[in-house]
Amino acid sequence: MKYPILYKLVCVFAFILLAGSVSGKKPIKTLIVTGQNNHNWQVSNVALKKIMEQSGRFVVDVAVSPAAGEDMSSFSPDFAAYQLVVVDYNGDSWIEATKQNFISFARNGGGIVIYHAADNAFSNWPEFNKICALGGWEGRNEKSGPYVYWLDGKLIKDSAPGPGGSHGKQHEYVLNARDEVHPIMKGLPKKWRHATDELYDRMRGPGNIQDILFTAYSDKSTNGSGREEPLMFTVNYEKARIFHTMLGHAGESLENNPAMQCTGFQITFLRGAEWAATGKVTIKVPEDFPTETRVTSRLDYK
Image 1: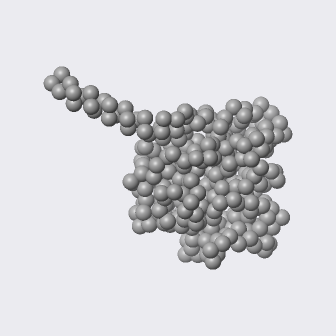
Image 2: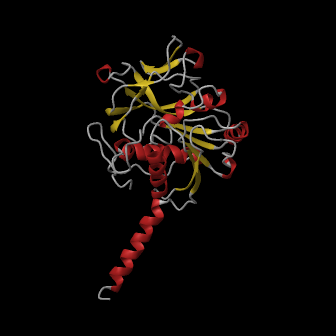
């Protein structure tokens, strides 16, 4: 080889970069729970697994439920075997043993991510609704808890009657930071533009939000609520660390999946997931993170 010293230097530099990408830490053992959803779970679970594993911080298994209407008695993931459970599920009720195992995982300090339409699930399961803090659809109304939205620098809880959960047409929108000190938030911009996505509004529930991280304005011009809606937050539930993101509507395919290909979605999801699992965040904010006026995307999820 003509330049052996240069070659060695390049190899060392590459090794340092690789080591830095995973922060020298053991990957977080993660379970994605999926298999039924009113959204395209066949795309979302694959995209989430790619996003997480390509970060170098997670190793991911996927638990796929029986199809809607089929026998759920055999669906019993071993939640306790994992540090982190990502819920990408909205469908038939779990059997009682599975419910209790999930609640035990949470109460014993497990890390949980509630992702997008998972907060539509299990409207009649009180403990799950506490784990979500806010939810929508599936018959939710004033009996489910108040509407929760942001106004004049604080969260408002409104017990007015009405259905829970709606969204206008999909569009780009700006996320507004409401916390600068939480580990998930350090280094993130105060405002950033998200790729075309659903913007959940009129969500309601127990409202046991611990840290409100990002909100976005649901504009009436897009058939929204006309309110500043909480879209990313942590939840106060027993010993669990819970990160809830309402972003990330799955597209028709992995290649046409703008909300999940958005760099902002991917990085906030990864940082929220790492915090839920460990209480710390080592995943860096990259230079290509969106700005207030510019959406950036990772079409290959890297």
